[in-house]
Structures are given as C-alpha cells and as structure tokens.
Length: 141
Image (cartoon, rainbow, N blue to C red):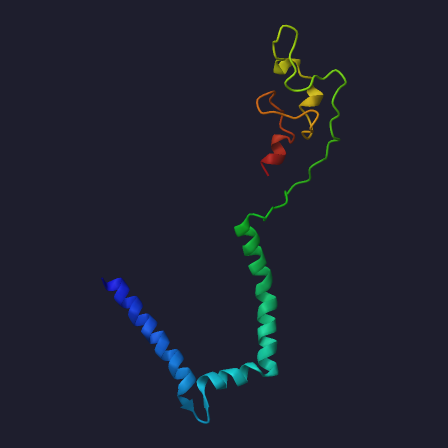
C-alpha cells in the first residue's frame, strides 16, 4: 500500500519541478532557458566532449561484457602446433567394419583426434581422451 503511494508522490514532485523550470521566470528567463544558454557556451561544449571521450571506452567495455563479446587473452605464451592431417588409412566417421560392427576409439589413428575438426574428419566427443596441450606448470600461473 505504501509503495504505490510513494511512487505517485515522487512522480508528482518531478512533474512539478519540470513544470516550474519551464514556466517560472528567474530574472528575464526561465530555469530551462538559462540551462540552454549555458549549454551553448564553448566551455560547456568542451566539458561535454571531454566527458564523452572519457566515458565512451567504459561504455564499450560494459556493452561487450554484457553481450558476451568480451574475450580475454591468455596471460601466457602458447606455442602453436601445426594442424593435423588425416592419415590415408583413416576411416570416415560412421564407417562400418566387416560384419556391421562400428570401429572402436582404439582403432582410430591419433592423427584424426588431434587438431581442429574438419568436415572430412570430425572430432566427436568420447572417441578418445586428449592429453592436455599445456604442462601443469603453465596452468598454475
């Protein structure tokens, strides 16, 4: 009961301030006219431009973090390994052995489980556990 009443009083108070700023004269101009003339000065424009330049990078960072586009770079150097090439004896995924049996993960050559996945040799979860690419000493940093 008290919450909506407080909101109504606040809205009425803000409405009264806006009405007064545009109708009641303070000297030869209203408060809104004074604020408008002050905002047109060179000093005010410089202040606004400096504030925008200072706040813009912060707003961009917040936007990227909220939208999920923020990617933090690793803090340690990672050596790039050359992309793996599939071996000529590798069977396509889903291929069946003689008798209709599917190949086990032990039968899949190591070259097909390393490197990025391609259309010709996709890596599927659970086919073979990969060794960590970084030593534990680097991960602890």
